[in-house]
Image 1 (tube, rainbow, N blue to C red):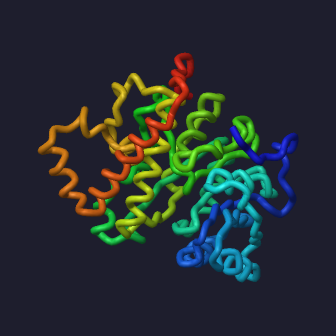
Image 2 (image 1 turned 90 degrees about the horizontal axis):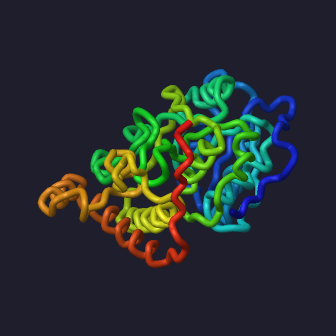
Length: 318
């Protein structure tokens, strides 16, 4: 585990900041204004700050964020030390002034009541995730390319021991719960959020779905970006398989819509050849590219893994 969280201040919260919003960002200048406009236009929000954790951007992302200083309480922090959103989010949490922290992404858009919904949710729970809406920011053809979970509930998976998980792009927690597990694992390029969810639940923190905590997410829309994302997801999924083993309740396979989003189904074991190509045809070229890239990444990841799988037998879902 490689974390950059400070020790000994898990309960800190400075006056005047009821919620800290952390945005991990790498070269997000094209979409970041949409997200910052949405945060600046929140309906009757509690006092909140925005921390842009800049993961080494070479574009104008940092300058764009600073240009919003007259509209929202915003800071840019240097999170370029390690490549990847896990490191950026860890650095953002370390810089946060509130003990209530929420994540959103630079290429998405929060709903108008998102800040208040996150604050209220953390009155009752230590760890929450919300609804992911794919309608607003994506064309019909782009929506067909991916099975997107977390629209009606938490995600399932074929790895681990039956715990639910959620994407970090719409997640909030109390600082103490996050620091109990030392934050995100920065050795993972993707799916750090799934890993975090499982570790936090294994440590005794329940993950709760809040349907009124809503973000509008932006899917990859070019074949190149779909291929890159699919490949990295598949490679990281192989790492999680090695770390956690398979979920006996899922028979070692991703059988749900959410499982397909996290890692993709086993085409060899779950589907006949005709059914497989039928589903890919319905998703179009983009969906086919994403799935094929995922499987290429998964094969690469499995070859790269050298340590024995870790099967966690004694943990049960919180």
